[in-house]
Each structure stands twice: as C-alpha cells, then as structure tokens.
Image 1 (cartoon, rainbow, N blue to C red):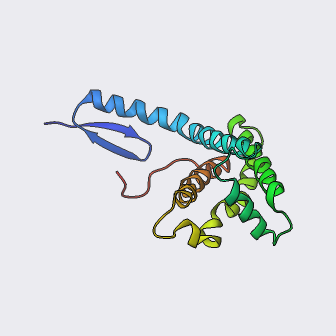
Image 2 (image 1 turned 60 degrees about the vertical axis):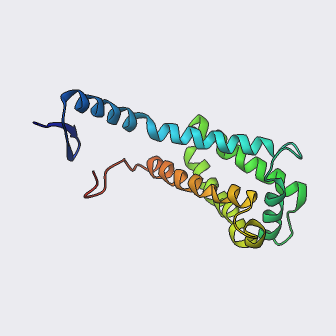
Image 3 (image 1 turned 120 degrees about the vertical axis):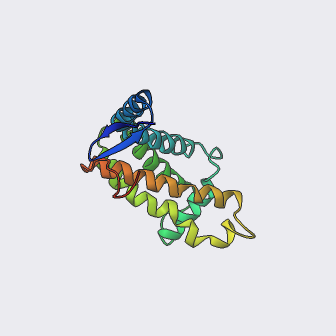
Length: 170
C-alpha cells in the first residue's frame, strides 16, 4: 500500500490515504492557529470564576485553605477575610487579563507570584491534604499543577515562543 505525506514544517508524516493527510493537515492548521488562545482563555475563565467566588463569603470551597495559606505566607500580617479578599482580587485580575488578552504579560507576572501561593498548601498543609491519601481538598490543590503547566505554555507563547515538535517525536 502506498503512503502519502502530510506536510508539516520541519517534518513529514506518512499517512495511508490522501484524505487522511488532508484532514491531519487541516487539524494541524487549526491547532496551530487557535490552541494557545483557547488555552489562555480557558485558564482565564478558571481564574475568573474561582476569583469571583471568593468575593462572596462561604461560596468558594477553597476559602479556608486560601485564608490559611496567605496567613502563613505573610506571617500573620494578612489573615481571614482580608486574605481571601486579596486572593479574590489577584485571581480576578489574572482571569480578566487572560480572557481579554489585554495586559497578558502583566497578568502572567502576577500569575507567577500567585502560583507560589496556589501550590504552597502542598508543603504547608501536607498532613491535612493527605491524611490517609489525598483528601478532596488535596485533590483540589493537586489539580493546580495542570494550571501551572498551562500557564507556562501561555507565558512561553506571550514571550514569542512558537509550538514546535521535539526531536524524534512523531
């Protein structure tokens, strides 16, 4: 059976049928054009949604852990409602920059700092998050690893990087 080649910058993919090559080429074009923007907007919606919840006491499932984390990280200077309010403002700002595409670099700088706070409970409250395996709050915090990875992709793109395959990757 003869194979056809789907043209990709720097690489060729051998496919069995021309229709499949065309489909893969179109999919590649769509992914290249829209995937980073969709990731940026999706991250923004997550931060915006969770940030807005924190403006309303009792609505956010992460309210207590956010307050405890900020209190611990600021050595008690910012605590309780003020810690949650600060988190709400920061997360909402990050969300707005990512969703709108305006001031993205500034939003990403703020996000970098926020990720320290977001990931800190893994170290500060390990015993509460993983008493006998991951608690529901532990799972909630662990899922933030994917937010950090997505933010790194968006940041790389905002700083001028372009998607490219690794050597030897098919």
